[in-house]
Image 1 (cartoon, rainbow, N blue to C red):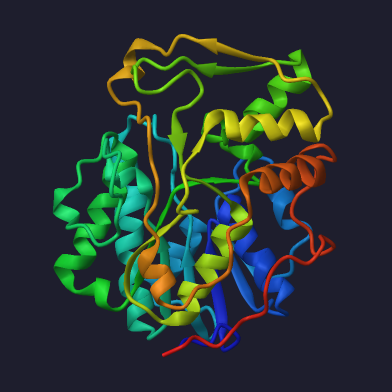
Image 2 (cartoon, rainbow, N blue to C red):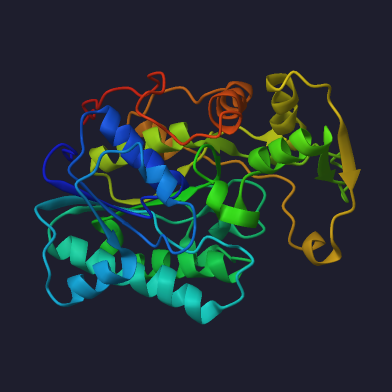
Length: 343
C-alpha cells in the first residue's frame, strides 16, 4: 500500500481537466504539499488553480530542465503524470513524441530512481478501432492506434513493458472523461460542454447521423465517465501500489442521446436534437461502440459505485457550467476519505 499523505506529490498537467480534479480531491483529503507542473501559456487554465491549495507551481519545461540538471523538488513520494498534448487531430508527430513519449520516459526513470510512485495517463485511444472486449489485459502489441496522439501513448506503454518499468509504475487508460475545468481544450472538449453551449445559443444540439444499419441516429455508444469518478479511481490505484496498465471508465456503454438529454432537463428546456452528416474523413475511423472492462480495478477492491450518467451530467451543468466556475473546495462533499487497500 502506498501512502499518499507521505511526502510531496507532483501533479503534471495540474491545471488540466483530470490534473486539477486530482488536486481538488487531494485537498479535500487534507493534502496540499503538492507541486503543480503545467504549461499555462496564453490559456485561461490558470483559473482552474485559483481555488486549489498547493505548495508551488513550475512550468513543465523548467521542471524537465531542473530534473535533468539534478535539481531537487522536496521529498517527492508520488507523481501523477497527467500532462500531455491530448489532441487527436494533432498532425505533428515529432512534437507528440517529444511531448508525450520522451517527456514521459524521462519522468518515469527519474521517479523510479527517486523510489517514488508514478501514476501516468495512457489513453483508451490506444485501442484504436476495436469496439469489443476493451480489456486492459490485452497484449499491447496487438493494439493499432488510429492517430499520432494515440500512438505516442501506445509507444510509452510498450516501452514500459520492454524495459520492465511496467512492474514499478501504473498507467491509466482514461475513456471519455468529462467534467469541470475542460474549457481550455478547444475541440477536445467533451460533447457535454459543446452540447451545453449549442443548447444555450440555439436551443438545439447537433449529433452525427449513424452510417451503420445496426445503430440508429444518436444511438452510437461510448463509455462516458465523470471526472470525479475518474479521480476516485486514479487515487485508489495510486494508493494501491499496483503496477501495470488499468482501464479507467464506467464499465457501462451509453448512447449520445443518453448523454445530451440530461442537459436539456438540467436547463429546463425542451429537447431539440438534429442529426447532421458525418464528415467523410471521419467515417472510416469512427467508433460506434466503446466500453471499458474494469474487472482488474474491481478485483483490487475498488467498490465505489460509478455516478449514474444523468446525475453526473446534471451536476456538471447545474453546478459548474451554468455558474461558470471551476472545481472548488466549497463543493458539496462527494469524495470518500482515503481507505485501506485490501491485500
